[in-house]
Image (cartoon, rainbow, N blue to C red; front, side, top):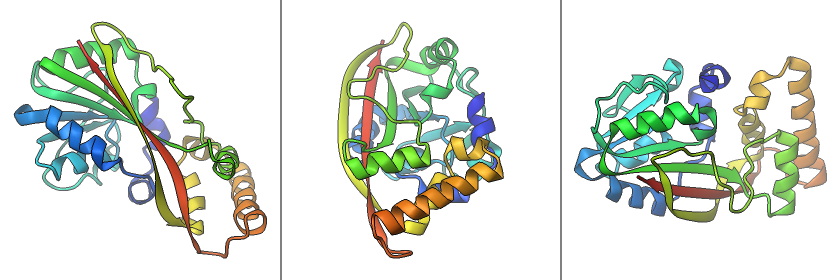
Length: 236
């Protein structure tokens, strides 16, 4: 699974810098999960799993990276595995979530496994946080960071039978962080993780120029990084 290769060396920094998910999305997913609970696939450090658990949902976090799973909060079951072969019994959960992860999966195998583990009436939920590139300065920032996970309005991710899109929602919001952490955020991106040191230095220098010279922010000042979050719900 490519996800493991891109992010296996990360953990605490990824968890600290990557954004969480809008409260209204988490509330709706907790309602859907019900007493059977949820599996969060490609869970990473457990951002979404922790938010669901805080609302009383029994969550199993599944990810191929043991280092990422080491950051999952206590009280949440964390299992090493991939979307193509889930370590769960059949018909065992009411909710399957994949946050920032579906595009890494083999769609055919992932849909087959989602169909296997979801109980009758279950829901497959896909979530993405992306930089809000409708705002010009954020759009340019995303290009400098090589944030490749920018989604067009009305995008449709690959999906196989038996699942059909039943609902989609979109929220725009902001995450406050220091300008120094914006550069650290860039280092959690797959482009940075795959690049050599020369390329990383170039990206960091470009970010310094953009944040401090072009936009005029003071070092370590706080800015509001603008995000768009998408939630897509699928049912059989």
